Image (cartoon, rainbow, N blue to C red; front, side, top):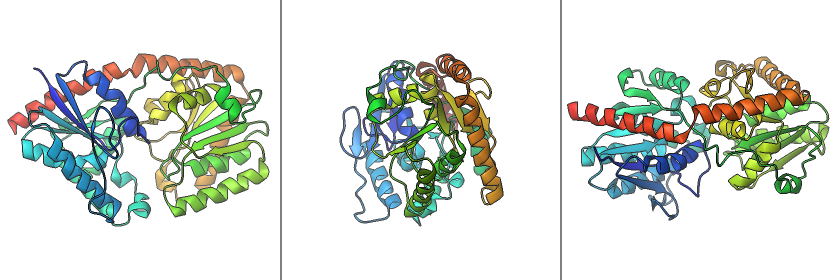
Length: 399
């Protein structure tokens, strides 16, 4: 059949800040190869290729309530002739829920993350966290199909929402464009950032949130070899609490590693990030929760070895001992200082093992790029997503 799709998302290029935005930005062009039409509804300022809805109503309200206001606007703008609505993250799930009811078409949700696994968001949203949790749960349970971005995420979805029919939960992994993320041997960006290209370089790219575990990396970095550099491409912290914790850890690190650690707070263009990843000896991903981790794919596609915590879907991306190293982490022991200190020490040890062995780093980097090309193409992901749409349409028709 000629398929007409409406994609609902908070983020859409060029204004993206997380993995869900990268996912949607890559998926939409591929879907357009196979569908008759792909409508995109997003949030924020106007941009090409999508209808944007500002998060301004109700004025002055909690951020979660303003998202729901944008959701209503998005649902109202969905073309009336679509065959399926596909929403990404809780920010857009509510729009998909009410849009599917209004138009009587199936709703597909993609679980890029899960609110029950991110309790620290209560610091950021206060009562809005209860709203976001309700919006996600209600949408998941009502959806014709749920897409998880990894097998680990699928298990988390079914654990968090035990009323879900497992036959409606499918796995379609995130992907990478190896033509966009590929080795860049240029040096203008890394030179401008003060990188010494004759010394090992460890790089982190991501937000300063509890989820990304950056504080653990900063503490671990005190145990890195003296000649190792640490470059953090990390935006402003999410909350005053995480800001204070990170700033304290960074100040302590700066005392003992003066000149070897640098924090870049402004968001660099993706092309600049690509060059930084290429020159990194190790990409560090200390996440305490990660459904899949597109950023690991970006590093691997640039032929960079990865040291990452073995949580969520990361083990489905990083092959331990081949494309990098995985470090065990149990979120249930996050309140035990001795356990956390041991995790940080192990993280540092694994980084040191690779930075001390340039041949191993090179071998892992090349294996990582091969894995990206073989297993994580966006065209393959688009075809798998279309197959879920077909199943969702059949499920909706039989309901």
